Length: 348
Image (cartoon, rainbow, N blue to C red; front, side):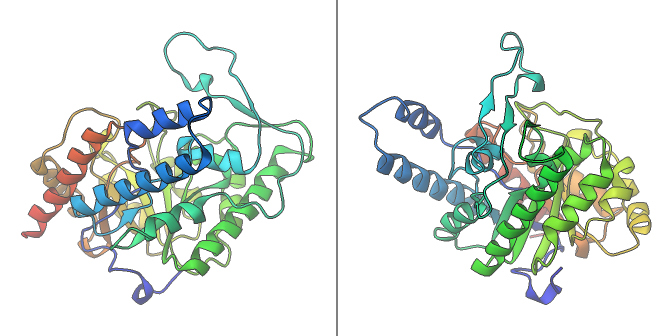
């Protein structure tokens, strides 16, 4: 964990920050899907598209006025986890149920038949570097955590157990985080929504501890309850998770509140007491799972509610989750409402 004076900007004091992903422009998905089958589209065209989409993701966040932006996570295809699975060369098995309304049972499984490559990059470094090349503001680096990376994993061979595979994933995440810090990242975040659904919190804690070991930066842990096509996958309460979260050595928790109508905000003082140490809070005050467009007044109301329980010096404001599942025009409106609402609370 890094001393506060080494942070890229003063965390807390109602800074606005990104969670990670941004909505990709519609043409990017079209080009990538066509590029796989169209001989008229070459690899250089797709690389240029990835750069252009990253530039747009950076510009969207900077124009909205965020104090700290995310990489956008549009540099590689496949959304939140696709780049990591592709880097790990994990083939996918199609789901058994392919018809009817979307459900998490329609997500493909990934077959693991051999150990992970020893020196694989998970793609977060390239994504962050691309964003930094366009940004004028601090860029948070984000990496999927080991439990979440293992979400679709079916171990066929290569490891004696799923637990051994998870701990190897933790080593890979640790190497990626250290590479990010070595490249200049001052704020790194691991995304571990699967902690909310995992049946073995002890494994989740051990894996996260290994992933963060020796990482000299401001560290954040993002825990949400799932957001594939706007749908959660877990019981949406943090209180039962606090004993496990408290054992993970990070400076900041990034938690969703808006889509839960600010539930559990009043528990923050008790969470800190149970954790036994100081923790910053980046609180979600924008609901990315709803098409309702918050106004600046809505955001200000949510921030004022948080300030009844969390000191302003410890509080940053963000969205509940990334915007990868949100239409771009909605994401832009929500980002602008976030910044304007926080400014109203600040009296700017």
